[in-house]
Image: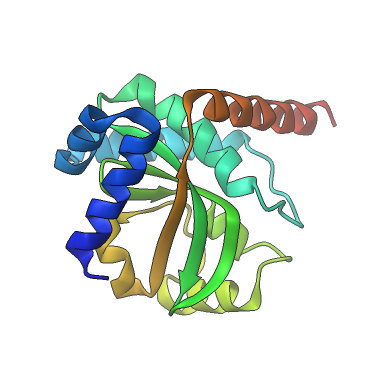
Amino acid sequence: MTISQDILQLGKRVAASHGWSAAKIFKAYVMSDADRAAISRAAVDLLAIFPSIPDAPSDLGAMMSAALAVSVERAISAPIHVMRGHLAIEGRPVLGPAYGWLMVGPYVVDIALFRLAYSAGAPALLAKHVDLAFGPNKALYVDHWSMTRRVGLRYLPEHVLTEAEVTALMGDAFHRIKQARDQ
C-alpha cells in the first residue's frame, strides 16, 4: 500500500469513529513548532509521574497515550486521536493488537515506545531495533506517520478510540499513578 493510500485508510478509520469532518481536519493538520513544544512538555510531565513497570502490560501504550491525549488537548487545538493496533518493526509485528499511540493529525506521537523498549520484558526485536535506531535515554517518538518507515517502524491502526474509551483508559492511568504514589 502506498503512503497516500495509507493516509486515506487512516482517515477512513478516523471518520468511522468521529465523522468525516474530523477526518478532513485530521488529514490537513500540519504540526507547528509551538504544538511540538507543547506536546513535548506534556509528555515529559506525564513520564515524570507515570510509574515504570518492569513487565509492562499490553495496554500500557494505550493507557499512556490516553493520558497524554487528555493533557495535550488542553494545550493545543489540533485533531487528536488515540489509536489501537499493531506496531511492526521491519515488517514483523512486535506489539499489538492492544498497543496504543496518539495521532495528532497525521503525526504519530508514541509516548510508550521507548519505555517499553527499555523495559526488562520488552520483545527482543523491539529492544534491539530501538537500541540500534535511536540509542539509549529517549522518551518520546514524534514523526509524520508516512515517515515512520524510514526508521523501520510501521504503525498499523485497527481502531480509533472513542471519547468514552479514552476516558476509561485515562482512569486506568490515573489509578496506576495513584497506586505508585501510595507505595
